[in-house]
Length: 341
Image 1: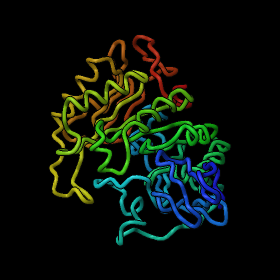
Image 2: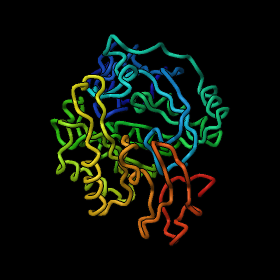
Image 3: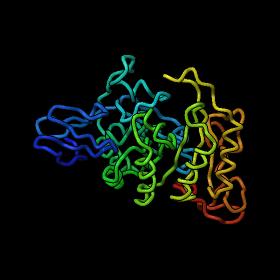
Image 4: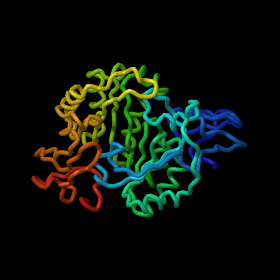
C-alpha cells in the first residue's frame, strides 16, 4: 500500500524514506536498503496486510520485564530488515530477501483479525518483532490502533536504527519501545550495516516522547564483549534515564556465527554489577537461567527486596502493590497493568 514515512527526494521523481536511519533516497522503481520499501509511480509502497509468523508466548520472551509481567503476548513480524546481523535469531524471516533459505510465505490477515487472535488467546500485550518493525511501521500502526482499541498494550521490538519521524508516527498507538543496542563502536555497527549514533539518539527520543523503554545488549564473544565498551553502553543508557532497564543477554552460536563460544555468565554478572554501581537501577542477565537466577528478578531500588520474581523468561510472582514495593513503598517504574497499576 502507499506509505506515510517519506519526504521528497533531491531530484524530481525521487523519494527519501524516513522509516529508518538509512534515510534511503529511492530512485524511480527502486527499493531501499531494507528491500521492502520502494518507489512506484511516484509513490512510496510499503508492506501491508500480512504476517510472516506470529506466536503467543509470555511477554517476557520479548525481553520486556517491566510491562505486565506474566501476561501473554501475541508477537508478529513481517519479512525484511534494515540491518544484517550475522548472529540474528530470526534470520529466516528478517533476512528472507537476502538468503536463499528464507522461511515461509506471507500469511494474509487483516489488522482486526490479527488482534482478534490475540484477544481470543487471552493476551494483554501485542508486539511487533522478528524483523525490524519500523520498516513496516504503516502496518504496525494499523495493527496497534486496533489492539489499543481492544485494551492491549503495544510494543515495538526494534533494532533502534530509526528516525524521530518514525518514532513520532508510531507514538499515538505504541506504548513500548524495546531496543537492541548491539555495540558501541563504528566498526561493530559497520559489520551489522548501520551506525550506533542513531540508535543512541532513538533511545533518548523515545523516552522523551513517553514510550516505556527497555534496552537489550546481546553480548557476543569476540564481537562486543569488551568490559570497557559495555560499561560505556551502560553509562549512555543511564545518561538518558537510570530507570531504563538494561538486559545483558548471553549469546549462543547461530546463523553465521556458529563458530563462536557461548557467553560466560560470570562475565555478564560482572558487567551488571558495575552498571548497578554506576547508578543503573534495573539490570538483568538473561539466556542463562540454569546458572544465573537472581539477576532475572526485579528488585526495589531502595530496599532491594524482590518485587517481581522470574525464571527463564517466565514471571513466577508479582509482589508489587499499586506499582510500588510492598516493603518500603518506593515506586517501581513500568507498565504494570491491572494487577499493579
